[in-house]
Length: 254
Image (cartoon, rainbow, N blue to C red; front, side):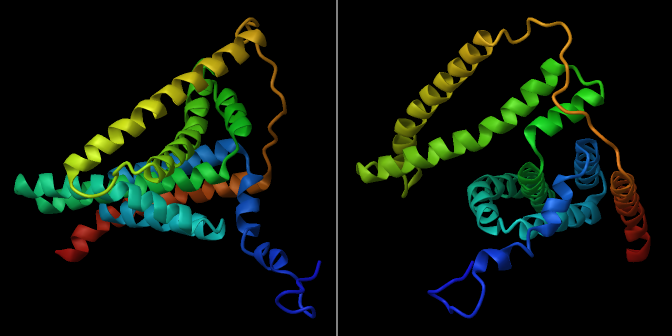
């Protein structure tokens, strides 16, 4: 494949892009239980291990999103979370604890970034098989995976409704009272579209006799490999390093 517009003597750019996503492809072939273990270790590190776990979690999310060439969606996520993070900081500032507000806002941004990064790597069917292999009830697993899959659809619907509202002259920017009136007109059709999608999903599940069988057979068997063992060990070492760093940091500061 050759790119004539840039230079007919050089290969096209899609071949150049493949070098960046090779790391993400290697992660996608791992056992889903390993990905769940990594996700659990990163979340525990962010919530428990203080600034060390916070920085390690944000760095992990940034590395995964960079390998997946998904920095622009990450910036959009940060822009969406910015008002909420600023509100948290201001409320804690009024309460007399600004540093606590900054840490809470940073945890919120980090957890959302970690969720976005792992959501782009993981596959819904493989995660469902991994949760089933971990003896999680299928009804719980289905609700978790189905809810996670619904988030990008709701986000796309919200973007389309927002663009349509601006084309019709509905003010979505400016003072808060103007934004409230504009967003009220957007959220009502968004709620209708979400309910309609849920009803369609329910009708499709009923047409396929979902839940009629007491025992479900897996679509594909999970196979544990040596690479999965190394990745699981790396996750445990990651969490141990975060815990050790959070315990050693006050001593070094003192």
